[in-house]
Length: 223
Image 1 (cartoon, rainbow, N blue to C red):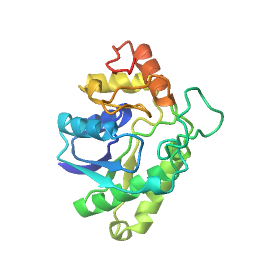
Image 2 (cartoon, rainbow, N blue to C red):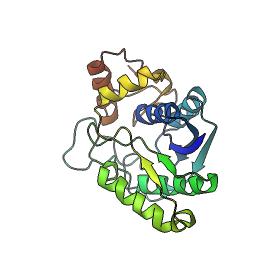
Image 3 (spheres, one colour):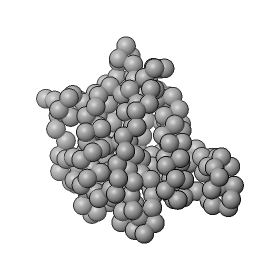
Image 4 (cartoon, rainbow, N blue to C red):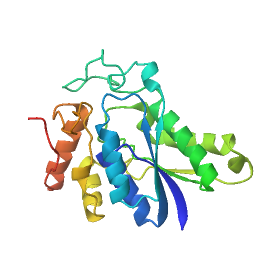
């Protein structure tokens, strides 16, 4: 079987991406990050999802993006907004996907794989620059230039199967593939038990997605 590294946050999109990769015949190596985010509930969720969706191996790497701050997700002095914002919101974490993909690229090369999966979305998302198709294409070019495997002729592929889908479409696909969304945590401000706030961008997209998909929302909310 082909091997692939799957970036797994523990949220709805990354869980669906893992299920898609597995359905396409890949041996899945899941990669998560303790990067200084506000809560560890999503990492607990990532462990549950990796086990439930049949990952061959699951690594959690600790990196210090919180040392820089600059985001509501890594700096508790910046409040998580509870209403939509103009432009790129304060929940954007500087260079996060670039750092994550770089780690995934390193592991993929060691595994002898040229396939990386990431659950970014350019439709129902918060306007992050590192969720766009042109960004994914640029990283693929970088991967081929920056690695021994690429210089020797391998071509890396960053799979972003959700990038043009609405949240409802993602949920329908995941439901058909057997994803248990009750295991996932998407909220920016989840508590230690994984209960969601219900008002942040991520919660709003998630709630709307389940409603539009006609699928029962298994999310546990704080109130």
